[in-house]
Amino acid sequence: MKIVPVSLQGVNLHKKTYSNNSNSISFAADKFITEDQYNDLRVFFHHIYEYKKGLRSLVLTTEKAENRPIIESKLKRENIPYVINDTGKKNINVFFGNKSCIRVVSTFDKQLDKLTPEQDFMLGIMLGYDKILQCKRYFVMRDKLAFQNRHKES
Image 1 (cartoon, rainbow, N blue to C red):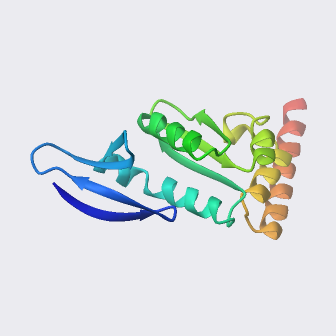
Image 2 (image 1 turned 90 degrees about the horizontal axis):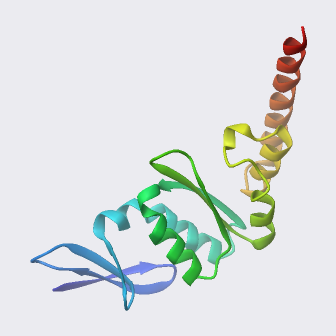
Image 3 (image 1 turned 180 degrees about the vertical axis):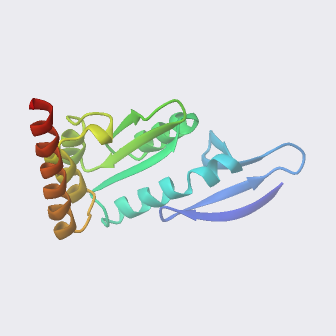
């Protein structure tokens, strides 16, 4: 067995490579994921690092649905509030971060393309998007919705 240190969330983990079977990575004494799963979840793990360092108060990441148990386990272990919404059969949207932000997000429609202009604006601001661009986006969405509603009535 070859052990290679892997730095993640400021914690030194060990990547354990087994020459006879498969590759797995340990996140705790009893938790292993495959190397492919680790590679799929690299951005997710980096977002946790950024959240814990205070760079983000809310994170949204789209991940493979098959990784949901790993994601939920990690967020529970780290005591990070979260909401997970299915986007279809293959993917999930994972929101995690500040408890107040998660409470707000949990009131939104699970399908992001169904958000009202106000909800879209709030989500963008909480995710740290540029405030001026979010204001412009809000007005475009609001005006488009008003136009669609006028044409439905006629």
